[in-house]
Length: 205
Image (cartoon, rainbow, N blue to C red; front, side):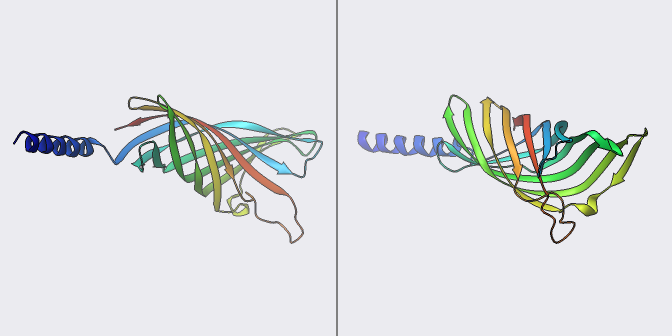
């Protein structure tokens, strides 16, 4: 009778422990984007510079095994980047603004005491692209150049995060895999690659 009681107690404790484990968890995050469009081939009079934007959205985590989590993040991204020309011809600088919907899908692996490494792929849809040109003769001109860019861009992403109870601090780098601009002519060899550093704070519910 005593052995039966011990066995039943062990089964109850095991089931209670499994029930307490959350397979799915949800949260929200927001933070800064530090973006730049790298252009090839290089030109001696053109400098690509980082610009600051932001991102915000949700987080969904699914526990796969003890230390491995699948993480999906539907995000809105505002990207800024700057091109400067010295000496210039007509324009001294161009400020680019990109509105984007992103869906990163990452595997997150626990290393030590809340520190995790993250890596995965992202699907990115470009909603709107604006170009503000600063003219040599003075004044700025705005152009909607959404028709000149590709709408869908796959990307790769990776970084590290630190979890403190329900709060998550995240730092990662995102790189688009294909050309941002459409080919302007059959022989056009110019490449435009968008890269973004992201720093964010999130809260899991």
